[in-house]
Length: 233
Image 1: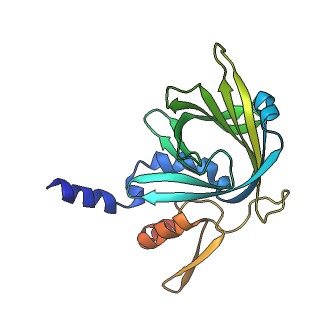
Image 2: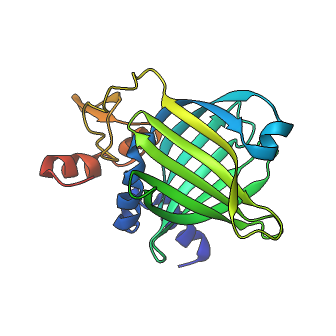
C-alpha cells in the first residue's frame, strides 16, 4: 500500500478508532462545552501597568478528526488567546493544551487534572513546555461549578522558584442562571448535556456542540448502536 492510500485511510478512520482512554479523559471537561462570558483582570505589577478589566467570550466544543479527539476553545475579544486545543496524552497520563495568541504566537502547556486547595476544586494545572526561550509559565483551569470556571496564568520571574499570578479570568455560561445545574438529555456522542436537537431517519437525538453533530452524521450508526445498547459514550 502506498503512502497516499495510507493517508486516506487515516483521514477516514472513525473517531472511536482512537484509544478510548482519550475520550474518557476529556469527558471530565464536558461542563465546559458551550458559550461563556468571561471577565479578566491583571494582578500585581501587570495589573499596575495595565489598569482595568476586560471582557471576553469563549466557546468550547468537541473536535473529531480521524483518530484525533480534542476539545477546542475559541476566544473573542480576549487580550491573551484566540484559540486552544486540549488533548489527552495516554502514554504519560497528562493533558496538552496548545494555545494561540491574537498575534499568532503559539504556546504549549502540559499537566494533570487534580484537586486544588486541599481538594476543594477540581482543576487542570499545566506548565508551558514551548517555546523554551521564554520565562516559565503555568496555566490553571479551575472547575468551580457546571456554570462557572476560572482560569489564570502564572509566571516565574528571573531567579525565582515560585510562580506569581499575572491575570485571572472568571467565566459564566451564557444564558444559564448560575444556580442552575446542568440538566437535560445526554449528548449521544460525548455523554455531556445535549443542547442541540438533531434528526436521523425520523428519530430525534441530542448533541452538545457542532463538533459532536459533525461526528454523529459522519458515522451515525456507531453512536446509535451504543446508545441503544446503553453503553458509555
